[in-house]
Structures are given as structure tokens and as C-alpha cells.
Length: 115
Length: 111
Image (cartoon, rainbow over all chains, first blue to last red; front, side, top):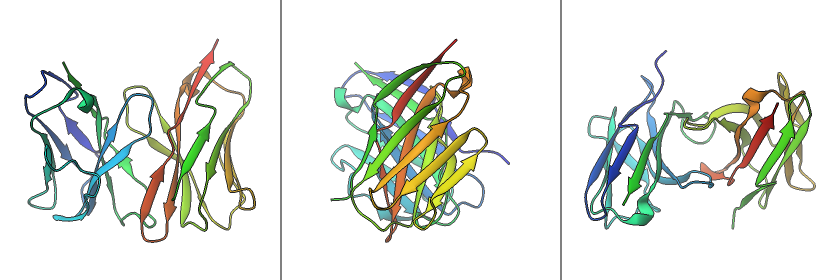
């Protein structure tokens, strides 16, 4: 079974530029999450989708971050314009049964460096 | 406020030695508590899952324990190997579906 796929693995941009990350979850997983992980810290939830609907985006900085999951399968996370403090690893995860009982399966992450 | 605090922040041990990582949570009960292992440059992978009523759960050389009285979980690694070098993250799943992540413990196993 294929795991969660993310791209690109690495991205270096200058502040005020834009960037987009892509995630393809495990086939059949209805729930998709985007996490931000700053070096030395645990992952912080940015947004959770259930199929193509948003369940929780309370910690998403909506002035610069946006995410979509149009067909309920793959998802994109966009940052525009980027700030220095956005340097982090962006992890995508999926689960089959939602957060109450399901194990999260993570991709390898997209490492963003903002100069 | 639901919080999950892990200690120590980092740990260095020699290959073959045992170690114990701690996870303290503030609010109970919860649905389940998971320990994840995150290798450098990779996403976290689940090691163990414990429900609120369980006291211990093993997965090979990894044993997780839960003490509901002290609101603490421990992850014990026996006979450490170089491949155990990673970050270990405690995640508490609360009723209502909210996941709270600890900040992780970075373990380095030296030969």
C-alpha cells in the first residue's frame, strides 16, 4: 500500500515570495491534515479536512496561508507571501476514521526555508 | 487548557543501554495516547497506542506505560540500537477529536 506522498521535499524561497505544497493521502482515507513542524518542536495542526470539507482551521494564519482539497483526495497548501518564521517542515497526514480513534499516517514532509 | 509536556528534551545514551522517556498530560480522561517515532527527515510513525484503561503496551523493545493517577505516560526502550536515534512524540487524543502533540524528545544512541 502506497503511503502519503508529498512534494516538493525541499523548497528555498525569499521572503514575500509564494510557495505551494502538494499532498496525496493514502487511498480511501477521508481525513487529511496539514501540520507545521518548526525545528525542535512537535507538529502544530494547520488545517484538517474531512473529505473535501474543512473540519478545523482555527490555527491556520488565513492572511497568508490557504489550503484546498477540491475533490476530497489530494490537497495543496499555499503560503503567500512567505515570512521568515514560516521556515519549517510541512507535514501532511491522513487517517481512515477521523481523529477519535484513527492512527495518523504521515508523509515525509516538505522542508521550507525562507531567506 | 489541554497540554502535553515531554521530558527530557534530549537524551544521549550508549548502544545497548535502556532509557525511559516521559509524557505528562494535564487533562483526563482521553480517548487514546500514542507514541510516535520520527526519524530525521521523515514523518512520524506510530509505535504504540494506549486507551485510558490500559496500563502497559509493548511493541518489541518499546514498552509504553500509563499512570492515570499521576497523569503520566512513559516510553521505555530496552537494549537500545543505533536505529533508535530519533525524536519520540507523545500525542493525546481527547474526546471530541482534538489531538494534542508533545514537543518531542530527541534520542541519540551512540556506539
